[in-house]
Image (tube, rainbow, N blue to C red):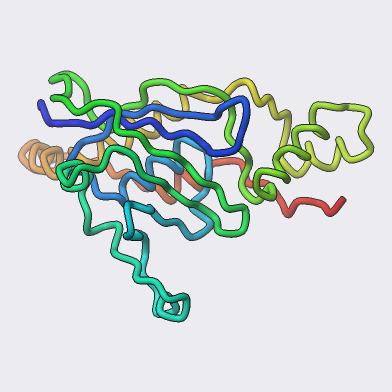
Length: 225
């Protein structure tokens, strides 16, 4: 089915060389869905709070504690990407894990009709491996890279063990991103698939994003240096 899509580029701030991803996303997607896509693209586990900073407004998951910080948080699940773009948004910021404080610049590169033979969201391309969850922000990631790339460092074995194996910053698993986003795309087609399966007497396929996240490597608590 042909549907309007936006090509978004996600780029981590303050990390050099740049860590980035590019994804085609339906305009009908909510910001909460964009959050899920970012989590998949950067191999994070949705273990922390997040927010989108768009102009003078913040979108995320509102909490009763927001008033204590003097801010109003709007529901990310209530704003669709197409509405945001119609309002003139071309660039905005995604923040994740207010401890590590990861900030991503999001750029709307293109809006067009999607291909009839492609299900969306669809991964396009990207570069470099994202920082692991709970690594300690930009400075912690810098230290992490220094240690895991130096087999003679006294903390090398501890940090490789914490991460769960070899960490190559120059590569990332694009096939895995495509596979998980493909499952997300299939889930979007769920109502139509369910209707067809009911007519054929078959059970519909189900996709559980939480189970996919649980299958990702889980770093243990990072050892103190």
